[in-house]
Length: 171
Image (tube, rainbow, N blue to C red; front, side):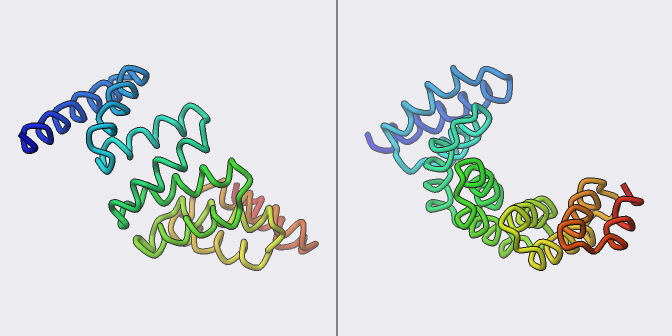
């Protein structure tokens, strides 16, 4: 009987993922919440519910689902990244930085994690750390205008106008 229940949850989760991918978010959400009632550690249900909550600007809920997802699967790179984004939106920069760090530990060439870590560091006025993060992001995607723009902003705040101009010329 237990095996049949797991199979039923798996089928429901797959169906919900198809609905989510087709843009039927609310229907997918209802099914996934039901699936978690039957199987509270279903990774895919937690993952998709976390994504849905984040897309609906429900960052507290997103962080709860994504935290549970990375607890189930600690190498879930996107989970750590979007957990960081949720924490950033919730005004929890230290948690955001920790989450971005975890994503980077798992995948060192994760451009977005380096870039967004730099943004949080910049907002915290940790300018040297922000420069280091943006430089890593720049090395991973030298043509990204937003990296150059954000790096330039850091240099402006540090009153290093020559470096700022060099960055802005690359935007």
